[in-house]
Image: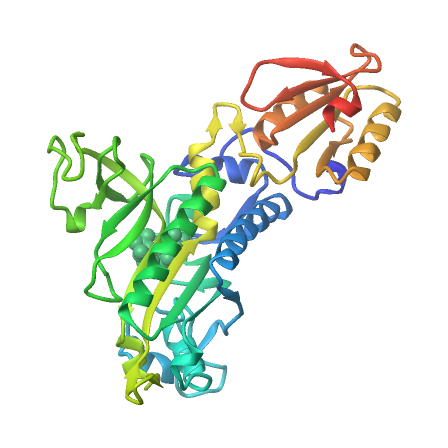
Length: 404
Ligand code: ATP
Ligand code: MG
């Protein structure tokens, strides 16, 4: 992509109301735009990152046999009334102009909707197990919409639900989902602790959260850095300084960002929607379910929190909006055009800074945008290209073939 075709501009100064690094850098770089408190637009560069992250999530969910679908964002009142969740405090309710009552909630989670759909498709143990997921905008009336895109009133989530005949089968899928989640966060350049946590609004059971240590996190967790045992403070059985219950390590207290959460649901939703199946012995039984969320947009904010320096973002290659940022300092621009076309021909995602602006401005913009490889073409470098990794000081001179 030519940078001149991007309508977004970068800014040297952080917006005055930006409270965290992710908000400041993502807004300065033109990745996101804050429309209202907790309501963001994903601008072209930011949307490329969201797509990269969603694709990683999709690959890992597909790999454990889940199937993608899309449910309505307008959730009929009948669904939430069935589980007594029509009145939850994070809900938004909507009514059409001229209508007397609220008929819908804006979807904040989809257990009810999918359970009801599934009840029309499932009848026998032979239909189980299976799992389905969606990547969708969710709405929550968050009182504290702060920390940039880490906590929005509107945000992008991957929610997955699984359906099983037996508790054993559920548990085996739950373990697989833990591994899939670990893969997602690792591929996104994050070190996430799989943390024992409370059930919250969903269930009384122990659940698991995936927590990334960061000073801007809203959760307090107790971790053993040695064996990676971790508990949320809400359910903690250990405190800082204690001996780890799993190894000889010492427990530390950390603040962390919850990037994902997996829940055993038992038969709560199956009971509410009469989702049953006929078991092998002919008995009618309720389906056992699990629910698995990842905050896709929160993940982008978390990556920005973890991967930046004073000059700007330092995207891990796996989620970077482009692989190469091509800067052209020459007058004619022909060498840069050739390099741009050669990279595109090889399928390398390249952003070409073809703007009429100073070399200094281009270099500062490249640091701010944080694309993994910077390639500079200038009168100084002759027919060679100056190649530098973002986040490293080492500069090498190479050919276009080296760059590719
Ligand atoms: P939190 O405890 O942070 O309020 P939650 O436990 O209510 O989150 P879940 O219902 O488990 O959230 O949602 C699944 C995932 O969606 C969370 O792990 C988080 O990554 C993300 N998420 C939840 N709420 C928000 C929000 N308001 N803005 C952005 N992402 C969110
Ligand atoms: Mg949660």
